[in-house]
Length: 472
Ligand code: NAP
Image 1 (spheres, protein in one colour):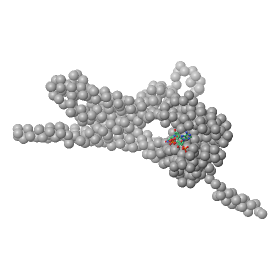
Image 2 (cartoon, rainbow, N blue to C red; image 1 turned 120 degrees about the vertical axis):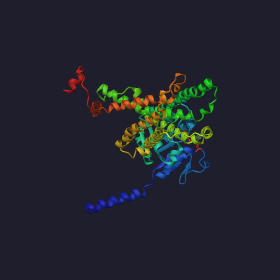
Image 3 (cartoon, helix red, strand yellow; image 1 turned 90 degrees about the vertical axis):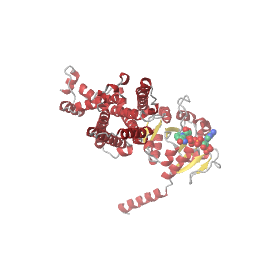
Image 4 (tube, helix red, strand yellow; image 1 turned 60 degrees about the vertical axis):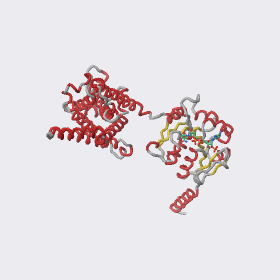
């Protein structure tokens, strides 16, 4: 037989073997929510699935094509076993140690509280069956996410374990299921992984405290100035203003401050780099943390700006507004008076609304482009153009909108009730500082230096000998 014919027949043989090879069999202990979802997903990916159950004949409907049997029989049939059972029931596994010897056991369990047990569930499992290779994985996914397949919020499978081969096996399975792997090292990391699902919005904690604190502080400030002041000085009850008027002042104020707080750390970082003359020194931790929560701050700012828009839209249907308009109209009719058209006022109000609409439109664009599905479709340059350039433009429009709202109010003494400045004035402090600092960075001397620093240039310190020798 010629070499060519030989290799052709060999490859044909390999193809036919692959075609007849049975799909890999995976065992799942536990026919509960997670066991069923995982089984369903494994089947869809082409695996065969067998369940180990206490009641193999009465464990309810299972994904079609799977089989339920006793734990012993199921354990013997597969080399990869998912333990989809709560930790408090693990003791039955000790008796199965001979059948589970040498097998890869995937611990998917979570606890209701942190530090409920002295050791991590996966370490406990490893202690019960020392001859097995325990891998902690899949515990950060819900049964729902497993059934529906990976989505942006649950694309990653965190994994840890002591055996490299065992981890490799689980990694391959997770990858086939469509997940990406984050290897957290040895089994001693299991407790950390078990604590992940217990965290509630960990990245949102600081960004949430800030708007809550600011909202409460401004709400109190404005109630004192607008409601209590009127009651104390004129005996007028205008407490109804709390529901819409004050809410519609507090939300834009906090929104604008939050938006400017998204851009302030970037400006501080730029000045810090200019001052240090290098980009290779770490920023202080507080600045790092601040920069990391800019996305959350921005989204909360957008949420508050949206509330401001909604509150503004309902102004014409408010009883108080309708009452005031008709009262003014009737009094003008009675007095046979007409008000003169004020072009300056028309310009002012139109510009004020226009800035608000443009600012909110760009606000929405910033929010949409921060969605992972959108940002993934953008190049880094496009993303930073939207978030940085258009972001500053948004801040400018919103700040200008607020300046137009204030117009010349700051000239009138009556605006300073109890010697306090109006809320809008306070809201302008941080954004104005950010915009001025940003404008300063546009100065050619600063801009040029910053660009060079960001390209890796370092200012030489005449007293720093170590750097001198390094650079000569
Ligand atoms: P589940 O619906 O309560 O199912 C647990 C299964 O364990 C039962 O269906 C039962 O299966 C088996 N079982 C119950 N008592 C047992 C005992 N005394 N001895 C032996 N087996 C027993 O729970 P689950 O929601 O599927 O969760 C299973 C594990 O996955 C838990 O450790 C949980 O922390 C983890 N997890 C769940 C989710 C989720 O979204 N549900 C997400 C991540 C991690 P048989 O009757 O067939 O024996």
